[in-house]
Image (tube, rainbow, N blue to C red; front, side, top):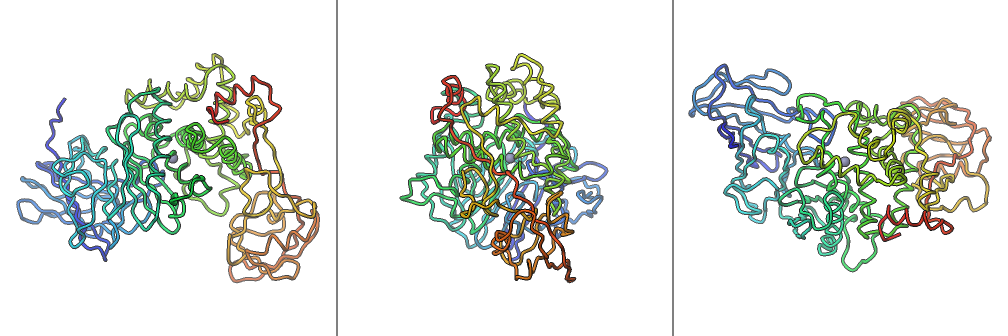
Length: 606
Ligand SMILES: [Zn+2]
């Protein structure tokens, strides 16, 4: 059915590269008679924190028929223009200097924006079609435009006219404008483009080849071999920096920030740790094209961009996505089974080192994402569990439980896709648990009560064992030991000790986190304290571990530390390091039926 509302016309121009200002206008053909109201989102879907994008609107003015119209702020995120008859244009200067994938950026190297940061929504016109003109910056002839917004006059990669069916679509296609590198590949019958901005020396052909395998594997997972992807094209927008990591999902694209060392270098055949983490990030965001962009919680259909949108299901929408991002690397053959088991071992380690998993469930963590997971502080590990990391382990456990019952999490994802994603209806809060029980052929309410609504650890040891994978635990080798491998142990064979705190990676020995019930907490140390001496010897971030390694569990030490500018002395009794570091291995002695289950789970690579 054609959209009856007249189109809302947007125009965005990089106004001043050095002042980081876009000039953005929005024109409404026939404004509301009592004065047209405009709103700007307070958050961006996929990142669950109120960000108040309006704080970067530095000057807002309105005009009608060439004459200025009064416009006034009515709320933190809303403006109302005085009544006028003709087309009404509101123009804003928007400050854009946020390097993340969540907002907007402009300088002499590139321009980037999410619509949520720059495009006002005329109230009552949310469903009107949108037309957008993207204006080229002066003096930058090599800059091109990369976005999945459909062209409407513009040529592919060009400045000019674009369109969207409604406001929701307008803000779900971020735009990168730069002198970027480009490579393309085909997967699921559609073109996938990769553009990379920033300084880098990536092997583009290698990158395209590996991403193609990952994308094909995911299209097949949802719709079977030879199926077409559920979008007309897909775009990976990559920004390479010295240091950086992050991504945000959209319906036909993703914005990624990475360190340039994460990108593959020419002539290097192996998938190293850094490149593997980049591929995992790309795989994660691509999986979201189904899981959360099309299969959505009912709480997000539609989004209310003016306030928090609560759901208790992020452990499935983020956690299952985190489970599949690495699993797909193994199934597509980009990494082998040992590489995958190393990643899984690290995820288990991450969760085991979080005391907060005993006090918060992943369902509660999902609900409170807006005020807890997204607002981390020194106490976060003690009070919060990550719905990403533990959600991934719930996904793993559910997958293995379902496999034991002749189904799988793949089947659950396909069911969600058929019943909700394809139909455009939201998943109710109990929808996933109900489908899981249906697929298992028995009531899994107890599983969800324990591991999703409760704080229990899923029984991974037993479940992995029945799939031919041995799970082992050991003490951490040191502060950089993230788990996933067998480790070295202490070379003198003595038991490892722990301070019960996380120390900053470099510089002063600042305590980032003090863990619940640990040695540091019992001694009275707190997050933010700076340890300056242990047993009378000067301490820094670099040598804390070496100073502690000279001691045995139960030893009593005097620790000097600054809290703010006040020096204090603490008596600390060292603990034996807990066995909170996990590594997994293909079990050589596994019975044939366990090996068959492992092959079905990991693909042919095991
Ligand atoms: Zn995600």
